Length: 273
Image (cartoon, rainbow, N blue to C red):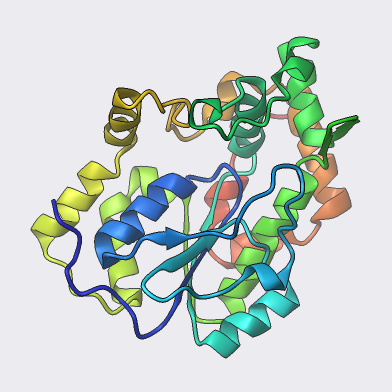
């Protein structure tokens, strides 16, 4: 199905997402809806600064998409650009599980983008590996700061949506209520969209459709499960306690800000510490 023939060009689209929150799926949605391909800054493995305002720019005929943190400097630039931010967050308990598998299974190695640190996780058992993702660790060739910086990222995205006209959704909502969320996105972007076109975008951006297409190209490692609440199968009560400690230490305002924004689902777990 051909993307929309008249792409959005009046206002730059700035697509900011948390690492492992469904970025590729949402990129496809925006491209199919607008006709614009995405642009991200050149990546140098192990030397990425997600808080560098100079990494934000507008390439004509594209939309910007990256894990850039909306720091005060980035937010000022967004306003100067008169951009339309499209923001994506995820349940804070599902995030570390997805991050664990990203590194432990060397996700994206099949497209030449693997981090090649999977050997560190083979040296420990599964619960310990998850704890390393939550709390952080340092190795000679890999410094992982832990979950805290990503929780701060979510908090910054919520604050941006609170203070500047933005479209904010969660990976959870895209899986459970995609048609509703895409209608709201089309309204935010001032894009007319037919029910038939909407249904096509919903289907073609489904986890199953995207994984099947990637598998056919031997590039399917990026697509693992595509589920909500997957953490219930892997995290323990001790892991939940660790996450709560990280929140208290590094993002204490996150729960209140998420609840005020109506995104309680990112704080929800059926497990107890």
